[in-house]
Picture 1 (cartoon, chains in turn red, purple):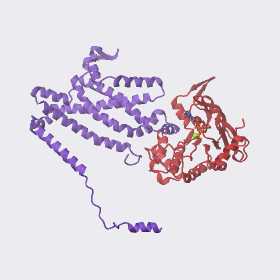
Picture 2: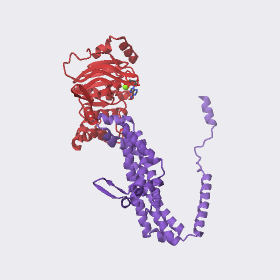
Picture 3: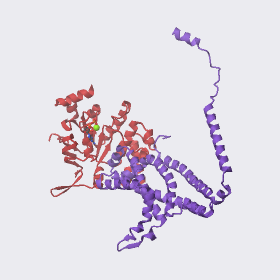
Picture 4: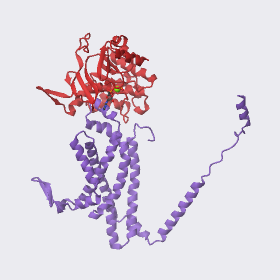
Length: 263
Length: 284
Ligand SMILES: Nc1ncnc2c1ncn2[C@@H]1O[C@H](COP(=O)(O)OP(=O)(O)OP(=O)(O)O)[C@@H](O)[C@H]1O
Ligand SMILES: [Mg+2]
């Protein structure tokens, strides 16, 4: 497969093998295979409706795949292998598997009844079973990391979009995921707030976090991504280093899309 | 330019004028009309055949106070049972499991489809079809001993309430954005934990106003249990007037107590609403 990163030589932490997902008769994801190495930053670009969000949601099992396989951190997502049979995992096991991935949503999805700090400690305390003292300590460190140390006690309604998204990133990081998934994290933001979120993501990438980022920010992809994946109609059309896919695409559909975004 | 200057010059200078307060003639007329009606009503009750001394005397009669306590306890008991059943039923109804879903829908259909007075009579007369109840080999009892008026009233009112409460709870759950379920799942929560920690605290804002309504309704609905001899306040008031014929006086006593209980519930509801409104903008 050309999708497997050749240069890095690191073991893949996410392996997607011929994944299919339909909604009714509509094929949202149509035979996608992709490997993401540990520490790699992969940006997924593509037109609206090309299946980018659906692919991310398959990885953390918010969507059940119809066919194929997804491996995350060495575990087959959603199934137990026994002999030559696959058994559906119970809900508790799926919830445990989801801990390997952190998800950042387009519309933030912070818990509005909890403060920024409470949003971040909710998972560590309720799911990971950490002590409140430890969780709070780590949450303060995370808030500092995303530049919101002084907003710990603010409710989401009193934060700007950019601040909410940074809290959402901190909330995902608090679960100590192996991979971070971002679904257009800046596309619901006013233009002047995009930069502060991208800055946090840039820092995260530099720290060695494995990231799969669906984005329309080609500048960010060019600068931060190890690889760029272009999707169209549920399938991967082209993948390669950012400079190649964005700078000298080999597929006509890719260059047409890039031209349209830059226009 | 010159034209606008000219028209400004033509306008009178009103900077020294004071504003005369508005006169709300309509409101004064309405107040006067209401006062007249109230005065007429007060006079009618004052000259009517009501012995107000009896009202005062029976307001704190032992049987009345016992009835009041039973009314309050039955309201708390039936609402608690109703809320527990309602929450469980709503969760079942919203679950992906078709069996649980059908059971929940069947329950709501059965108990919302029959009059509560009929359900009360059925529970109270359960002994006619099941002379003994229990778990075979472990425990059993005569139904008439178990199905006292209080137990029959609790089951009848509580189970009926659960069918209605389930719809109130379901509406609350539907009011929470699906993104909240997804965010909860993404941090590793199971469905039930997500419901308990994330969805219900937000759904409460939608659930509490109609539930407050239902609680107020329940205070008064307990009076239906008087037909199965449950000694709530109306039942006891009736027993007294069967003996002394002071019908209106005792009904007024009962009415005063119902009003008092309901008046206490309203500020309680406001406190709850304030608690669950945290994080939402003020005044919502
Ligand atoms: N739950 C669903 N039910 C039915 N159709 C769905 C569902 N989720 C996604 N789709 C459809 O699948 C297709 C791919 O959707 P997806 O959200 O993955 O696209 P996308 O590439 O993320 O687009 P965008 O850039 O607009 O976010 C769309 O046509 C969408 O309408
Ligand atoms: Mg999308």
